[in-house]
Amino acid sequence: MIDSRRKFLGSLGLGALGMLPLSQVLAATNAWIPSTTNPATVPGNLGISGRVVVIGGGMAGATVAKYLRIWGGAGLQVTLIERESSYNSNIMSNLVLNGSMTMGSLSFSYDLLRKNYGVNVVTGDVSAIDAVGKKVILKSGSSIAFDRLVVAPGIEFETIAGLETAASQNLAPHAWKAGPQTTLLRNQIKAMRRGGVFLMSIPKAPFRCPPGPYERACLVADWLKKNNPGSKVIVLDENPGIIAEPVNFGKAFTVTHAGVIDYRPGTSILSIDTATKTVNTSAGQIKADVMNPIPAQRAGAIITSSGLANVGGRWAGVDVLSYESAVAPGIHVIGDSAATTQPKAGHIANQEAKVCADAIIRAFKGLAPDPAPVTNSACYSPITATTASWLTAVFAYDPTTKTMKSVPGAFGEADKPSTKNMDQMKKWFTNLMTDSFA
Image 1 (cartoon, rainbow, N blue to C red):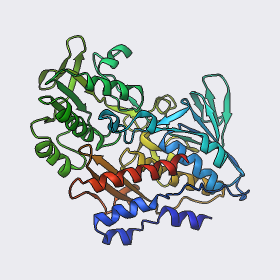
Image 2 (tube, one colour):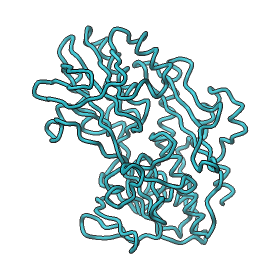
Image 3 (cartoon, rainbow, N blue to C red):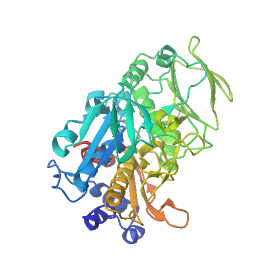
Image 4 (cartoon, one colour):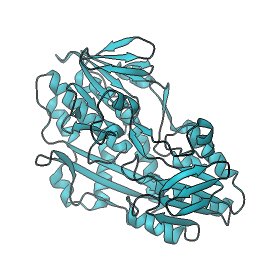
């Protein structure tokens, strides 16, 4: 069983990838995610017994719960705790802003995790983790015991001055967590005055989905050109330059959407006055009709309150061989909350979940983690309503630095946006979400 898991996890081997052109790396990355409507079966008792509790039902949490059951067998009890009854995908949510997709098409339930894999899904909110007593305490007052705990709470947002209340945040929504704010921002864009200004900001890295803000700027600009000519998109980037797909986004800003996108690197938001629609920045004041500031981010609140945020007080340090916390044995942190050298992205969360699941099963059998994990990430970025580019990367464990390092020759972006990439993006998304939730 371990050999088959390792083959599955390492099917994008280093030797082969190092020799492939990027187009073939991307094709291999997509093929790696199983595309099937027939769910895997949970085997009988494999001699592994134990209780694993998973906090958070996003890309990381759902995937680890599923694969713990598939690889661990019927003797491994898995409980997934999630405050929401369904998951709204952040991936593809920018396409809601231009009307290409609806929020309903991005909603995924946990029913198949229950039905197909026997995951015990609990709808609730976690108030505390008792690491010594090995139990998770819910806000309802009940508790759930564990032998191993996986924490995957996603991210929290820092507060921008002037946006301390829910009412003010609705006047300047970030929509960086897919849901009501996504629809709200869509409606604000549609209602923008003729020749108005859409202003968005990008926080200093790291943040969720590195290409996402640049993609958003392109999609909004593309929609405005067709529906509100004369309007502008101002992009305030706290980073010194475009940090993901610089070639394609650079061309999109200066050629494809020239005259519409005004990109300003090295500029940060100091405060926002929602009453006057004034954004105070490090380079002066700007008036905007629609304000879309994306705040700086940190690990989910339960990470901080449980003492797991040992990296700058913001992120959870982990051993990337198992994603076990650097400060709490038996507790694993995966997804956006974990501090690793890999991007904070849905595809990587799916990958981290599988490495973590494999390591936990090995631990129950008294074995060490796989000493050479490999992860991969693909990300498609719409540039217009009909074309997209892509970014791909493969990471391998480096025993010297004890980090996941990008594999030379297996990192890069598409030559140019195309309609074919847009079609591939839809297939990639379907396969990825199926792999995590179905």
